[in-house]
Every structure is written in C-alpha cells, then in structure tokens.
Image (cartoon, rainbow, N blue to C red; front, side):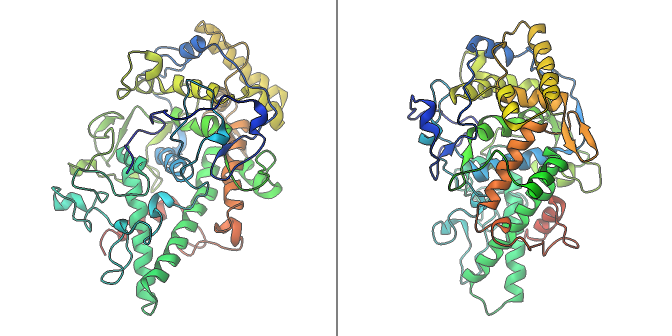
Length: 484
C-alpha cells in the first residue's frame, strides 16, 4: 500500500524532464499526453499566480456560498471517484517543467473500476472473500471483521488492516468521508449483483460469476457517467453533439491517453463546486470539509453519524444538497489547506497549486485553446472581460494570457453550461471546459474494447427502470448488498 495523500496533494517528488514541445508529439501507452500539441505555452509571473489564488484574493469565495439550482453535491464527489478511476500521477512537480510523456499514469486510462476491483481475485485475493466457501464477494468492514471496531460500524466501513488502512484498489478513495463511503457503495453494488447472479446460476463457478458481475457493474457505472454525470456537468447539447457528430479535439493517434489539458486544467472544475460546509446525514448538523466529522481521511469510522445518507448527496426526491456554483471562486478553506506543512501561503492554496501545476506542464492560455476549439469570438471576449475585471480589481497582472484552468472557471461563470434550452451560467462547464471533459471521457470509453461504447453499442441497462439507470438506482441496489 502506498502512503496515503489527499486528492491532488501527493508528494510531487520524482524525475522531471526539461524538454521541448516537440517531445510531446508521440503518445505512449500508460503515460499522459497533450491535445493541443502545437499551441505555444503560456508563461505567467509566479508572483501574479500566487496573488490570483491567494486567501482574500480574487478567487476567495468567502463565507457566503452561492449554490447551483440543480447540481447534486454528490456529483462532484462522483467526479473525484471517476478521476481516481482513470488517473494517478505520482511523480510530477510544479517546481519544474513536466513532460507528460515521461509521467506514468498508475491507473489504466479506462473507466474500468480498477480502483474497486484492483487486479482481480487472482492478483489481489486479499480484497475478496474465499471463492469456494463463500464466493468472490468483495470484502467490507464487516466481512473483513475489522479490528477494534464496533459491529454496528463495521458493516458501514471499508475493510481495514489492524492499523486502519483501507484494503482497496486505490488508497485515495479513503481520503475523505464521502469518497470513502462511495467506494463502499460500489463494493456493495458489486456484491448485490454477484449475489443475484450466483442465485440465478448455481452451476457457474465463482470465477465465471465474478467476470459477469464485474462487467455488469462496470457497464452500469459507465452508463451513469455518459447519461447522468456528463449531461449534468457539461450540458446535454455538447454531450449529444459529441455522441452524434464525433470528437473533434481528442483524437489519439493510437491508444487512449490522458491529456494534461484535461487532468491539469479542465477536470479540476470540481474544486470550485465543493461546499465549505456540508451535511452527511438527513436532518444532521453541518460540518466543515476539514472537520473531524467529515474527516481528513484515511481513518476508520468511529461514530454512526459519519455514515452517509445518500439522499443528502444525490437526487432521490429533490431534497439533496446542491453543489456550489461553478465559477472563479473556491471555498475559503481551500485557499488555506490545513494539511500542507509549509510556511509559504502559496503552497497552502489549492487555487495557486492548480495554477502553478498548469504552468509546469506548459499549458497554453485559455484564449488559445478556445480559438483552437472554435468557440465564438464574442464568447471568448465575454470571458476575457470577466477575467480582466477580476484581475485589475485585485491588482493582479495576467495580461499575457489567462491560465487554462482559470479561463475554464471564468467561462463557466460568464457563459455556463450549454443545454439544448440555452445557457445557464454557474450550473456547469462552458464550451471549452465541457468540450475537453466530455470528449476525453467519451473518447476513453469509445477506445476501450471492453466498455459498452467500445464493444456493444446496442447495450442498455439491465438494472434500474425501463432502460434507465442512475446513481439513485445504484445506491439503492448497493443498500441491498450490505449483507451476504
């Protein structure tokens, strides 16, 4: 097990390669890459980037949150879960130039739930129950018989070692209470599907049932990503256009890869949508994202109040918590991270870290990417006007160009999610952000010969209702899989 670290907060130690833009021409399996290979990189004064992302600066959302109208807060944590499923960079360093081709992606670039299943029961048998005596169910805290944990808490927790380390496919999925409970929900969902198949097919071997259950679970998860997650955050117009007319910017020459324009910029939109205070339970108290109740991660359940009520995070009946608006503001606490041991305020600001990371990967400006994508000039000018107003009001000079991540946040604020019924500012990604996110995720699925989009485009969900399957359906089925 690797040493736990928070989302986007790993050690940044490792080999970095000073290189020219030409070295990004080739794509390598298992490495990161680039979409806009021929766009010049933006350089911004590091001092200005620090001011842009500083506490009490232009990106500080303060203590008066603004919420979306219809984006469940759980969707942002699902986005984090998806990120952990497809990317894991353990070696980049925002203090030097990073060559995407030289950086290993520890995860497969497929939405295959290897963060849940690991390498499977042959490679990682410690994650599974005994095949012959019980069946190849994934372990939970209860079936693992977690050490020194009350019985009423074990069944609501991940399997853990005696020291409390989660026994799961990706250690990052224990970094906060919501992502930890979401990992457990996927484990339970698999156990539910496995149990149903086992009952219906008594003559099949545990291994055969596992393979069928894993595909069923994975394809239903992929269906949610395509039909619920992407339309919610990217807008149904852009998603439908990609599905109907094809991808225009994410076009790998060979195998699928993770572009840095996605991983370092566009897919970090969720940092703007995380609420500073949230509830874990129906009718429960509100807690800070860094409170003991929500947790700084990597610890077992110690109180029943830490168990998530999913109706609070996803749309069961319309009473769910809304995500904060997608805009240029982050929760104030995220600009002063308590777990970063540095006296430099810039190191503690998640916003500044994102900006510095983008610069270290030689990302082009947001305006440059918008032009490459073919965004209307009036929309680009609208975004630039907002950026210039924010920058000049706070005495920040980014006149050489807008960092891609910041441009995408400003675009979401100024233009917003593009739906068939029109634009809704603050509710989701604008044209640049949505195009990058949706094309990459859909491209990963289309290029994966084991996904439903890559192998059987006639497939529809066998669970749920009348060919529809949502996170609500998954979580309700997962609840049936608590015991086995």
